[in-house]
Length: 120
Image 1 (spheres, rainbow, N blue to C red):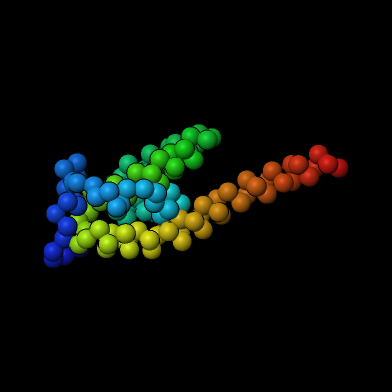
Image 2 (cartoon, rainbow, N blue to C red):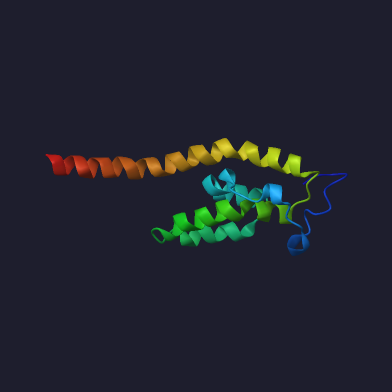
C-alpha cells in the first residue's frame, strides 16, 4: 500500500513480525468487517458472509476479526511505520463504531417493543 521506505517487519505474510504496539482491538475490522477486510486484502473476513447467517456465530466472528484485524492488516500490507499504521487504522475507528451501533440498534428496539408489549 505504501511506496518507498517501509517497516521491514510488515507486509511479509506469516514471516511478518507483529510489533507489540499494534496488538489489540480494531474497531474498523469489527464494525465494517467486509469493507475493511477487502480493502486490506484480509480475505479471511469473507467467511463472515457465511457465518453471519448463523445466529450468534456471526457476531462472535466479528469480535474475532476485531481482535485479529491489526495483525492481519500488518501482515498483508507494507507500512512505513507503526505510527503510520496506527494512524491509518484510527481513521476506520469512527466508522466501525457507527456501524456497530447501527447494527445493534434494531435489536434493542425490538427487545424494547417486546418488553413493552408484555407490560400492557
